[in-house]
Amino acid sequence: MNAESTALGFIPSAWATWCVRLFSFQVVILLACVVSAAPGLAQIKPFQTKAKQAILIDHSTGAVLFQKNADNLVPPASMSKLMTLAVIFRALREGKLKLDDTFKVSENAWRTGGAPSGTSAMFAGLGKSISVEDLVKGIAIQSGNDACIVIAEGMSGSEAAFAKRMVKEAREIGLEQSTFGNSTGLPHPDQLMTIREIAKLSRYLIKTYPEYYPYFGQRKFPYQPPRRSRPYAFYNRNPLLSMNIGADGLKTGHLKVSGYGLAASTVQKDQRLVVVVHGLSSARERKAEAAKLIAWGYKSFDNYKVFDAADTVGTARVWGGKTFYVPLRGDGDVTVLLPKGAEAKRLSFEIVYDGPLKAPIKEGDQVAQLRVTTGTNSVNNVPLYAAEDVPRGSIVRRGVDSIAVLTLRWLGDKASGLIDSVL
Image (tube, helix red, strand yellow):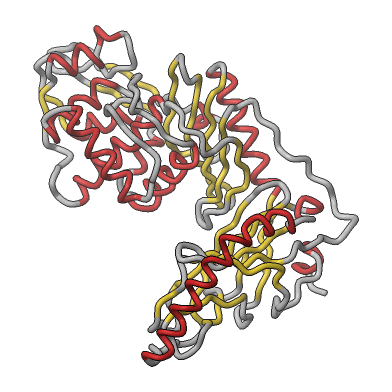
């Protein structure tokens, strides 16, 4: 028995035994039997946090290593500025905006988000023109509300119009629940995000805009306003940047109604983790809880191979093909991040896809995901690919499939309660 099977318990390479099959028009799920790990491995205690909401994700794989109330909609405070920057970065990438473009500070921006507001500001002078690059730094480093409003008005004419643009961008990224009423994160009934979606947005910014991401890790921003003898010295508000733990972004947030929050990313030994914590009682507690969660993540998880490259992981139902099912494989060995030792003693495997799949299907098409969930609620989602071609079937075959799918949909609805009781 190799090291992987020792850590996870014996896993048959063919993975032939499935406990339940559920089919519907929207999602097809194959639920695998629970796997027990070998006894005698070191125990790792589940993580406990004071944060009301928290999530820890492995950046490269998307594996959720820890989550607590991650799907609650909450006021994100200044962490919503990540979406403001996502809109800006896209405009820069597409050439619709340049770093040396300038926007003028309106009275609204100055009064609502600047010095008179008493909120986080880069102290942009009323009526002054400021470069886009300075505004970006003012947002990413100083969390300037005035900088957000200046650029929102400059790009969209009004902050309300820019907020609609933020929502549109969120949906394109895949954030399904987040809504925005302003560019700053200041209190607004429409300013709501989930911790999971803040983490997803963070990962998107890291992956999509490597040329702009370093702004988040810049420790100091010396801003020289016109007609001021000495520059402002703004220091990055991210408390993890000075801890020597590999932190290089992203954004803090605080409102009285929501507490203290932080979206952060760290890199250690070529592994990047993304953490979001929210609902903490102080800046000190925010720093401590985020750092503890990151440290726990690096020490508590290892990569394990659960399927070889040649293994058929499972099958997916196909409508209108010459065959009813297409076999599924990973892109090479299927490797997942799992808790060390006895934490992995309970694993469930699901094949998830929008189904039934429609023929024709080509070998190598990504058509499903393998979802691996542990007893501690960490989750891996691994892409699965068609292992062979499935050509389109005859008219008769498509008719038979239509009847079968309708029947199985009805059976799937009846079976949902059974699945809950079985597992």
